[in-house]
Length: 414
Image (cartoon, rainbow, N blue to C red):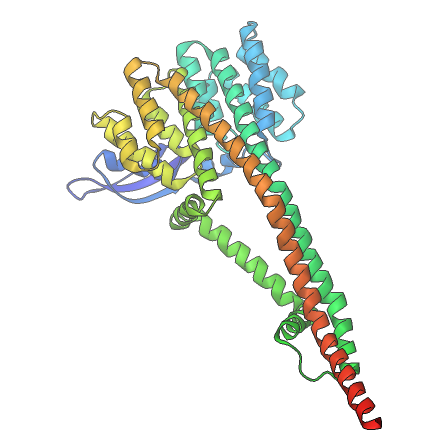
Protein backbone atom coordinates (compact mmCIF):
# COMPACT_ATOMS: atom_id res chain seq x y z
CA UNK A 1 0.00 0.00 0.00
CA UNK A 2 1.56 3.37 -0.99
CA UNK A 3 2.56 5.97 1.59
CA UNK A 4 1.32 9.57 1.33
CA UNK A 5 2.46 12.80 2.98
CA UNK A 6 -0.46 15.04 3.86
CA UNK A 7 -1.09 18.56 5.15
CA UNK A 8 -4.34 19.32 7.01
CA UNK A 9 -5.94 21.92 9.27
CA UNK A 10 -7.81 20.94 12.40
CA UNK A 11 -10.95 22.52 13.81
CA UNK A 12 -8.98 25.41 15.32
CA UNK A 13 -7.21 26.18 12.04
CA UNK A 14 -3.83 24.81 13.13
CA UNK A 15 -1.87 23.26 10.25
CA UNK A 16 -0.59 19.70 10.69
CA UNK A 17 1.52 17.40 8.53
CA UNK A 18 2.03 13.67 8.60
CA UNK A 19 2.33 10.47 6.60
CA UNK A 20 -0.12 7.62 6.22
CA UNK A 21 -0.67 4.53 4.10
CA UNK A 22 -3.78 4.32 1.91
CA UNK A 23 -5.03 2.63 -1.25
CA UNK A 24 -5.10 5.96 -3.09
CA UNK A 25 -5.24 9.73 -2.49
CA UNK A 26 -9.04 9.97 -2.59
CA UNK A 27 -9.48 7.32 0.11
CA UNK A 28 -6.91 9.03 2.36
CA UNK A 29 -8.66 12.40 1.88
CA UNK A 30 -11.99 10.85 2.88
CA UNK A 31 -10.44 9.31 5.99
CA UNK A 32 -8.93 12.61 7.06
CA UNK A 33 -12.17 14.49 6.39
CA UNK A 34 -14.10 11.92 8.43
CA UNK A 35 -11.72 12.69 11.31
CA UNK A 36 -12.72 16.37 11.10
CA UNK A 37 -9.66 17.70 9.26
CA UNK A 38 -9.62 20.09 6.32
CA UNK A 39 -7.27 18.56 3.74
CA UNK A 40 -4.98 21.04 1.95
CA UNK A 41 -2.47 18.71 0.27
CA UNK A 42 -1.82 14.98 -0.26
CA UNK A 43 1.23 13.73 -2.19
CA UNK A 44 2.76 10.29 -2.60
CA UNK A 45 6.25 9.90 -1.15
CA UNK A 46 9.15 9.25 -3.53
CA UNK A 47 9.95 5.91 -1.92
CA UNK A 48 6.40 4.73 -2.47
CA UNK A 49 6.50 5.84 -6.09
CA UNK A 50 9.63 3.79 -6.73
CA UNK A 51 8.11 0.73 -5.08
CA UNK A 52 4.85 1.22 -6.98
CA UNK A 53 6.70 0.41 -10.16
CA UNK A 54 6.39 -3.21 -9.05
CA UNK A 55 9.98 -4.38 -9.07
CA UNK A 56 11.05 -4.07 -12.71
CA UNK A 57 10.01 -4.09 -16.32
CA UNK A 58 7.14 -6.08 -17.78
CA UNK A 59 3.64 -6.75 -16.59
CA UNK A 60 2.09 -9.28 -14.25
CA UNK A 61 -1.10 -10.58 -15.86
CA UNK A 62 -4.19 -11.81 -14.04
CA UNK A 63 -3.45 -15.31 -15.30
CA UNK A 64 -0.02 -15.22 -13.61
CA UNK A 65 -1.58 -14.10 -10.32
CA UNK A 66 -4.33 -16.72 -10.53
CA UNK A 67 -1.82 -19.54 -11.04
CA UNK A 68 0.33 -18.12 -8.24
CA UNK A 69 -2.62 -18.05 -5.81
CA UNK A 70 -3.72 -21.59 -6.72
CA UNK A 71 -0.21 -23.03 -6.30
CA UNK A 72 0.47 -20.98 -3.16
CA UNK A 73 -2.77 -22.22 -1.58
CA UNK A 74 -1.92 -25.86 -2.38
CA UNK A 75 1.53 -25.56 -0.83
CA UNK A 76 0.28 -23.83 2.34
CA UNK A 77 -2.48 -26.44 2.70
CA UNK A 78 0.18 -29.16 2.40
CA UNK A 79 2.08 -27.68 5.35
CA UNK A 80 4.91 -25.96 3.46
CA UNK A 81 6.20 -22.88 5.28
CA UNK A 82 5.56 -19.40 3.87
CA UNK A 83 9.24 -18.74 3.23
CA UNK A 84 9.79 -22.06 1.46
CA UNK A 85 6.59 -21.71 -0.62
CA UNK A 86 7.51 -18.20 -1.76
CA UNK A 87 11.03 -19.35 -2.63
CA UNK A 88 9.75 -22.27 -4.74
CA UNK A 89 7.06 -20.18 -6.47
CA UNK A 90 9.52 -17.37 -7.16
CA UNK A 91 11.97 -19.78 -8.81
CA UNK A 92 9.42 -21.61 -10.96
CA UNK A 93 7.28 -18.71 -12.24
CA UNK A 94 7.91 -17.81 -15.87
CA UNK A 95 7.10 -14.10 -15.43
CA UNK A 96 10.40 -12.28 -14.71
CA UNK A 97 8.71 -9.36 -12.92
CA UNK A 98 6.66 -11.63 -10.66
CA UNK A 99 9.75 -13.75 -10.00
CA UNK A 100 11.67 -10.67 -8.79
CA UNK A 101 8.79 -9.52 -6.59
CA UNK A 102 8.18 -12.94 -4.99
CA UNK A 103 11.85 -13.36 -4.12
CA UNK A 104 11.89 -9.88 -2.53
CA UNK A 105 8.71 -10.70 -0.56
CA UNK A 106 10.26 -14.01 0.50
CA UNK A 107 13.28 -12.16 1.91
CA UNK A 108 11.04 -9.74 3.85
CA UNK A 109 8.85 -12.54 5.25
CA UNK A 110 12.01 -14.41 6.29
CA UNK A 111 13.14 -11.28 8.17
CA UNK A 112 9.89 -11.24 10.19
CA UNK A 113 7.53 -9.13 8.06
CA UNK A 114 3.95 -10.34 7.49
CA UNK A 115 2.95 -11.48 4.02
CA UNK A 116 0.27 -8.82 3.55
CA UNK A 117 2.60 -6.08 4.75
CA UNK A 118 5.28 -7.19 2.28
CA UNK A 119 2.81 -7.32 -0.61
CA UNK A 120 1.59 -3.78 0.15
CA UNK A 121 4.85 -2.43 -1.24
CA UNK A 122 3.82 -3.53 -4.75
CA UNK A 123 0.38 -1.94 -5.31
CA UNK A 124 0.67 -2.19 -9.10
CA UNK A 125 0.75 -5.97 -8.79
CA UNK A 126 -1.18 -6.70 -5.57
CA UNK A 127 -4.15 -4.32 -5.32
CA UNK A 128 -6.02 -3.53 -2.10
CA UNK A 129 -8.52 -6.36 -2.74
CA UNK A 130 -5.61 -8.79 -2.87
CA UNK A 131 -4.04 -7.33 0.27
CA UNK A 132 -7.36 -7.25 2.13
CA UNK A 133 -8.04 -10.94 1.52
CA UNK A 134 -4.47 -11.95 2.42
CA UNK A 135 -4.67 -9.94 5.65
CA UNK A 136 -8.04 -11.51 6.51
CA UNK A 137 -6.56 -14.97 5.87
CA UNK A 138 -3.59 -14.21 8.11
CA UNK A 139 -5.76 -12.91 10.96
CA UNK A 140 -8.20 -15.83 10.72
CA UNK A 141 -5.50 -18.46 10.26
CA UNK A 142 -7.04 -19.56 6.95
CA UNK A 143 -4.53 -18.20 4.46
CA UNK A 144 -4.96 -21.16 2.12
CA UNK A 145 -8.74 -20.52 1.91
CA UNK A 146 -8.16 -16.82 1.22
CA UNK A 147 -5.75 -17.73 -1.59
CA UNK A 148 -8.28 -20.16 -3.06
CA UNK A 149 -10.96 -17.47 -3.04
CA UNK A 150 -8.53 -15.04 -4.64
CA UNK A 151 -7.72 -17.53 -7.39
CA UNK A 152 -11.42 -18.18 -8.00
CA UNK A 153 -12.13 -14.45 -8.10
CA UNK A 154 -9.29 -13.78 -10.55
CA UNK A 155 -10.47 -16.64 -12.80
CA UNK A 156 -13.99 -15.18 -12.88
CA UNK A 157 -12.61 -11.71 -13.60
CA UNK A 158 -10.43 -13.06 -16.42
CA UNK A 159 -13.39 -14.91 -17.92
CA UNK A 160 -15.50 -11.75 -17.88
CA UNK A 161 -12.74 -9.69 -19.50
CA UNK A 162 -12.13 -12.39 -22.11
CA UNK A 163 -15.79 -12.39 -23.14
CA UNK A 164 -15.84 -8.59 -23.46
CA UNK A 165 -12.65 -8.56 -25.54
CA UNK A 166 -13.92 -11.39 -27.77
CA UNK A 167 -17.17 -9.50 -28.43
CA UNK A 168 -15.33 -6.30 -29.36
CA UNK A 169 -12.70 -7.99 -31.55
CA UNK A 170 -14.90 -8.30 -34.67
CA UNK A 171 -16.15 -4.68 -34.82
CA UNK A 172 -12.63 -3.44 -34.10
CA UNK A 173 -11.22 -5.44 -37.01
CA UNK A 174 -13.98 -4.24 -39.34
CA UNK A 175 -13.37 -0.59 -38.41
CA UNK A 176 -9.61 -1.00 -38.96
CA UNK A 177 -10.22 -2.65 -42.35
CA UNK A 178 -12.62 0.14 -43.33
CA UNK A 179 -10.07 2.80 -42.41
CA UNK A 180 -7.30 1.01 -44.36
CA UNK A 181 -9.56 0.64 -47.41
CA UNK A 182 -10.48 4.33 -47.33
CA UNK A 183 -6.83 5.35 -46.93
CA UNK A 184 -5.78 3.05 -49.77
CA UNK A 185 -8.49 4.29 -52.13
CA UNK A 186 -7.86 7.95 -51.30
CA UNK A 187 -4.09 7.63 -51.59
CA UNK A 188 -3.72 5.46 -54.71
CA UNK A 189 -7.02 5.19 -56.62
CA UNK A 190 -8.58 8.66 -56.32
CA UNK A 191 -5.50 10.47 -57.77
CA UNK A 192 -5.75 8.26 -60.91
CA UNK A 193 -9.36 9.32 -61.37
CA UNK A 194 -8.39 12.98 -60.85
CA UNK A 195 -5.86 12.68 -63.69
CA UNK A 196 -8.57 11.11 -65.86
CA UNK A 197 -10.95 13.98 -65.08
CA UNK A 198 -8.26 16.48 -66.13
CA UNK A 199 -7.66 14.61 -69.39
CA UNK A 200 -11.41 14.64 -70.11
CA UNK A 201 -11.48 18.39 -69.36
CA UNK A 202 -14.02 18.02 -66.52
CA UNK A 203 -14.11 21.49 -64.97
CA UNK A 204 -16.80 21.22 -62.32
CA UNK A 205 -17.00 18.19 -60.03
CA UNK A 206 -20.02 17.08 -57.98
CA UNK A 207 -19.77 17.88 -54.25
CA UNK A 208 -19.21 14.21 -53.33
CA UNK A 209 -16.32 13.92 -55.78
CA UNK A 210 -14.84 17.27 -54.75
CA UNK A 211 -14.96 16.27 -51.07
CA UNK A 212 -13.16 13.01 -51.83
CA UNK A 213 -10.55 14.81 -53.94
CA UNK A 214 -9.91 17.28 -51.10
CA UNK A 215 -9.49 14.40 -48.65
CA UNK A 216 -7.10 12.67 -51.05
CA UNK A 217 -5.01 15.84 -51.48
CA UNK A 218 -4.83 16.29 -47.72
CA UNK A 219 -3.69 12.70 -47.16
CA UNK A 220 -1.03 12.97 -49.89
CA UNK A 221 0.40 16.38 -49.06
CA UNK A 222 -0.37 16.92 -45.37
CA UNK A 223 -0.53 13.37 -43.97
CA UNK A 224 1.75 14.34 -41.09
CA UNK A 225 -0.85 16.84 -39.85
CA UNK A 226 -3.43 14.04 -39.70
CA UNK A 227 -1.06 11.85 -37.70
CA UNK A 228 -0.25 14.76 -35.40
CA UNK A 229 -3.97 15.45 -34.80
CA UNK A 230 -4.62 11.79 -33.97
CA UNK A 231 -1.62 11.53 -31.61
CA UNK A 232 -2.32 14.83 -29.83
CA UNK A 233 -6.03 14.02 -29.55
CA UNK A 234 -5.29 10.58 -28.11
CA UNK A 235 -2.77 11.99 -25.61
CA UNK A 236 -5.22 14.73 -24.58
CA UNK A 237 -7.96 12.17 -23.95
CA UNK A 238 -5.55 9.96 -21.97
CA UNK A 239 -4.40 12.90 -19.85
CA UNK A 240 -7.98 14.06 -19.32
CA UNK A 241 -8.80 10.53 -18.15
CA UNK A 242 -6.10 10.70 -15.47
CA UNK A 243 -7.67 13.76 -13.82
CA UNK A 244 -10.48 13.42 -11.28
CA UNK A 245 -12.89 15.49 -13.38
CA UNK A 246 -11.89 13.61 -16.52
CA UNK A 247 -12.44 10.20 -14.94
CA UNK A 248 -15.90 11.26 -13.76
CA UNK A 249 -16.86 12.61 -17.20
CA UNK A 250 -15.58 9.54 -19.05
CA UNK A 251 -17.13 7.08 -16.58
CA UNK A 252 -20.46 8.90 -16.74
CA UNK A 253 -20.35 8.70 -20.53
CA UNK A 254 -19.64 4.97 -20.26
CA UNK A 255 -22.91 4.56 -18.37
CA UNK A 256 -24.94 6.86 -20.66
CA UNK A 257 -23.76 5.78 -24.11
CA UNK A 258 -26.47 3.84 -26.02
CA UNK A 259 -26.25 0.03 -25.93
CA UNK A 260 -22.73 -0.07 -24.47
CA UNK A 261 -23.80 1.95 -21.41
CA UNK A 262 -26.09 -0.81 -20.11
CA UNK A 263 -23.39 -3.38 -20.77
CA UNK A 264 -20.81 -1.32 -18.86
CA UNK A 265 -23.26 -0.92 -15.96
CA UNK A 266 -23.87 -4.68 -15.79
CA UNK A 267 -20.12 -5.36 -15.79
CA UNK A 268 -19.65 -2.94 -12.87
CA UNK A 269 -22.54 -4.54 -10.93
CA UNK A 270 -21.12 -8.02 -11.51
CA UNK A 271 -17.68 -6.87 -10.31
CA UNK A 272 -19.20 -5.10 -7.28
CA UNK A 273 -21.16 -8.17 -6.23
CA UNK A 274 -18.36 -10.66 -6.82
CA UNK A 275 -15.74 -8.55 -5.03
CA UNK A 276 -17.93 -7.72 -2.01
CA UNK A 277 -19.02 -11.36 -1.69
CA UNK A 278 -15.40 -12.55 -1.78
CA UNK A 279 -14.36 -10.04 0.88
CA UNK A 280 -17.29 -10.74 3.22
CA UNK A 281 -16.96 -14.53 3.02
CA UNK A 282 -13.27 -14.08 3.92
CA UNK A 283 -14.21 -12.26 7.12
CA UNK A 284 -13.39 -8.68 6.06
CA UNK A 285 -15.57 -6.13 7.97
CA UNK A 286 -18.33 -4.52 5.90
CA UNK A 287 -16.90 -0.96 6.11
CA UNK A 288 -13.44 -2.06 5.03
CA UNK A 289 -14.97 -4.28 2.33
CA UNK A 290 -17.02 -1.39 0.93
CA UNK A 291 -13.93 0.83 0.82
CA UNK A 292 -12.01 -1.88 -1.04
CA UNK A 293 -14.84 -2.51 -3.50
CA UNK A 294 -15.06 1.21 -4.30
CA UNK A 295 -11.47 1.06 -5.54
CA UNK A 296 -11.96 -2.03 -7.72
CA UNK A 297 -15.38 -1.53 -9.31
CA UNK A 298 -13.88 0.31 -12.30
CA UNK A 299 -16.22 3.33 -12.49
CA UNK A 300 -15.87 6.58 -10.52
CA UNK A 301 -19.63 7.27 -10.48
CA UNK A 302 -20.49 3.88 -9.00
CA UNK A 303 -17.43 4.06 -6.74
CA UNK A 304 -18.68 7.37 -5.33
CA UNK A 305 -22.12 5.83 -4.72
CA UNK A 306 -20.47 2.96 -2.82
CA UNK A 307 -18.42 5.34 -0.65
CA UNK A 308 -21.52 7.41 0.11
CA UNK A 309 -23.31 4.22 1.11
CA UNK A 310 -20.35 3.31 3.32
CA UNK A 311 -20.59 6.67 5.09
CA UNK A 312 -24.33 6.12 5.72
CA UNK A 313 -23.66 2.59 7.02
CA UNK A 314 -21.18 4.07 9.52
CA UNK A 315 -24.02 6.23 10.80
CA UNK A 316 -26.16 3.16 11.45
CA UNK A 317 -28.21 2.75 8.29
CA UNK A 318 -28.69 -0.60 6.60
CA UNK A 319 -26.75 -1.25 3.43
CA UNK A 320 -29.77 -1.38 1.12
CA UNK A 321 -31.11 2.11 1.99
CA UNK A 322 -28.20 4.25 0.69
CA UNK A 323 -27.74 1.97 -2.33
CA UNK A 324 -31.31 2.52 -3.55
CA UNK A 325 -30.95 6.29 -3.04
CA UNK A 326 -27.84 6.37 -5.24
CA UNK A 327 -29.91 5.19 -8.26
CA UNK A 328 -26.86 3.26 -9.45
CA UNK A 329 -28.17 -0.08 -8.22
CA UNK A 330 -31.33 -1.65 -9.70
CA UNK A 331 -34.20 -2.47 -7.28
CA UNK A 332 -33.65 -6.21 -7.80
CA UNK A 333 -30.05 -5.92 -6.57
CA UNK A 334 -31.05 -3.82 -3.55
CA UNK A 335 -33.89 -6.18 -2.60
CA UNK A 336 -31.64 -9.24 -2.81
CA UNK A 337 -28.99 -7.48 -0.69
CA UNK A 338 -31.70 -6.57 1.84
CA UNK A 339 -32.86 -10.19 2.03
CA UNK A 340 -29.27 -11.38 2.41
CA UNK A 341 -28.66 -8.87 5.19
CA UNK A 342 -31.81 -9.90 7.07
CA UNK A 343 -31.07 -13.61 6.72
CA UNK A 344 -27.38 -13.28 7.62
CA UNK A 345 -26.33 -14.66 4.25
CA UNK A 346 -25.26 -11.45 2.52
CA UNK A 347 -22.12 -12.98 1.00
CA UNK A 348 -24.14 -15.85 -0.50
CA UNK A 349 -26.76 -13.46 -1.91
CA UNK A 350 -24.07 -11.25 -3.43
CA UNK A 351 -22.56 -14.31 -5.08
CA UNK A 352 -25.96 -15.08 -6.62
CA UNK A 353 -26.24 -11.47 -7.86
CA UNK A 354 -22.75 -11.74 -9.39
CA UNK A 355 -23.68 -14.97 -11.20
CA UNK A 356 -26.88 -13.36 -12.49
CA UNK A 357 -25.11 -10.30 -13.89
CA UNK A 358 -22.25 -12.32 -15.32
CA UNK A 359 -24.90 -14.30 -17.20
CA UNK A 360 -26.56 -11.03 -18.25
CA UNK A 361 -23.22 -9.70 -19.53
CA UNK A 362 -22.65 -12.88 -21.55
CA UNK A 363 -26.17 -12.73 -23.01
CA UNK A 364 -25.80 -9.02 -23.84
CA UNK A 365 -22.44 -9.64 -25.50
CA UNK A 366 -23.90 -12.42 -27.67
CA UNK A 367 -26.80 -10.19 -28.72
CA UNK A 368 -24.42 -7.29 -29.33
CA UNK A 369 -22.12 -9.43 -31.47
CA UNK A 370 -25.07 -10.70 -33.54
CA UNK A 371 -26.33 -7.14 -34.06
CA UNK A 372 -22.94 -5.57 -34.76
CA UNK A 373 -22.01 -7.96 -37.59
CA UNK A 374 -24.68 -6.79 -40.11
CA UNK A 375 -24.26 -3.18 -38.97
CA UNK A 376 -20.53 -3.30 -39.64
CA UNK A 377 -21.07 -4.91 -43.05
CA UNK A 378 -23.57 -2.19 -43.99
CA UNK A 379 -21.18 0.48 -42.67
CA UNK A 380 -18.31 -0.87 -44.75
CA UNK A 381 -20.57 -1.10 -47.81
CA UNK A 382 -21.75 2.49 -47.39
CA UNK A 383 -18.18 3.80 -47.09
CA UNK A 384 -16.93 1.94 -50.16
CA UNK A 385 -20.14 2.72 -52.05
CA UNK A 386 -19.76 6.43 -51.34
CA UNK A 387 -16.24 6.40 -52.80
CA UNK A 388 -17.27 4.44 -55.90
CA UNK A 389 -20.28 6.67 -56.61
CA UNK A 390 -18.24 9.83 -56.02
CA UNK A 391 -15.61 8.68 -58.52
CA UNK A 392 -18.00 7.59 -61.26
CA UNK A 393 -20.45 10.51 -61.11
CA UNK A 394 -18.23 12.79 -63.28
CA UNK A 395 -17.73 9.95 -65.77
CA UNK A 396 -21.48 9.52 -66.09
CA UNK A 397 -21.81 13.26 -66.81
CA UNK A 398 -19.07 13.03 -69.44
CA UNK A 399 -20.76 10.03 -71.10
CA UNK A 400 -24.11 11.82 -71.11
CA UNK A 401 -22.54 14.92 -72.69
CA UNK A 402 -20.87 12.81 -75.33
CA UNK A 403 -24.13 11.01 -76.07
CA UNK A 404 -25.95 14.36 -76.32
CA UNK A 405 -23.27 15.68 -78.65
CA UNK A 406 -23.54 12.62 -80.90
CA UNK A 407 -27.33 13.03 -81.06
CA UNK A 408 -27.00 16.71 -82.02
CA UNK A 409 -24.50 15.83 -84.72
CA UNK A 410 -26.75 13.10 -86.11
CA UNK A 411 -29.66 15.57 -86.20
CA UNK A 412 -27.57 18.14 -88.08
CA UNK A 413 -26.51 15.55 -90.68
CA UNK A 414 -30.13 14.76 -91.38
